[in-house]
Length: 336
Ligand SMILES: Nc1ncnc2c1ncn2[C@@H]1O[C@H](COP(=O)(O)OP(=O)(O)OP(=O)(O)O)[C@@H](O)[C@H]1O
Image 1 (tube, rainbow, N blue to C red):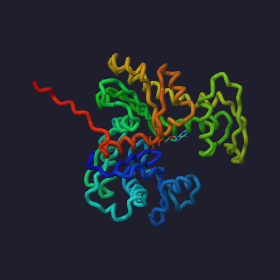
Image 2: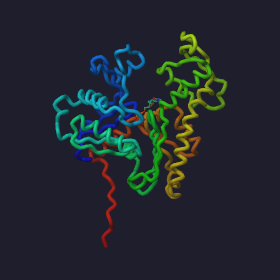
Image 3: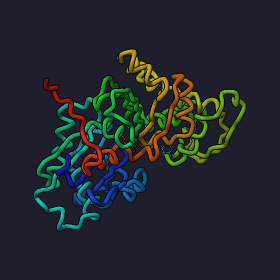
Image 4: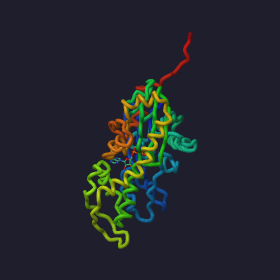
């Protein structure tokens, strides 16, 4: 790891790059826009994301990473080259000795890990080190992962939520569920479609996240939202009840609560006892959702802490490893 010069977190929502000696140099949406007539790349990152849903026929907006897995290696490679190119300059991209560290979702298939490696080879990397996202995130949160005591981390991203208990630098038990910020957004959109026959533009969903944290007693509270009528296609404003949206958001989150209890069930009792005091560290971009920590605290009856800068903990953890600030715990056999 100490020989790596670059650390990359290729996420479904965002791609983050850490350079040794420079820190986090890129944090861009994992989106690329292509002209289908010429095959030329038109935009990547923020600019490409702004085009999504607003393109003419000849422009395709691609998301080469889904659920933390590269599904279109060529596109991921072009996107990453563009994101990195601006930071490194053309000369450094051609350095043939580049070693890279990449985090991959826990339990990902060999073909998914291979896709991450191939993407980096395409950029000129000579060697690629793969690190489990859960370990990278735990290190990035500053958890004492190498100690003989339990730490629990929940990484709630865009497409997946990964849950793990770690001890002595390794994962003791872990689970991944295909529920993240995107599934919660889809649940809100579906609820408004079913209950109010309203199609909500994607940028209107985030303000409604506030409702997850609103108390259950606030059932009578209402708010106004603007969208498109499903039948007529005309712009319409409806008054929606907080409780309905809150319920819709909580439904996919039950899978996350189930994953946490499932992981705890697979842990030895001593480790579970440690967690009673230490609690759960919540990370990933969706940890920023207001009220998610409160909801998990109520559902699990355990303390829940949100990491500082939760969205970037995985790449920061990888960064700490390539900078040599974190050393792996070596459990050497004792000599007598
Ligand atoms: N302030 C915020 N409030 C609510 N949700 C947020 C906020 N910021 C980011 N998110 C959500 O976090 C998710 C992105 O998180 P993150 O950047 O960790 O994903 P990723 O690592 O790219 O995805 P994955 O881990 O699934 O590959 C998106 O679903 C986004 O809607």
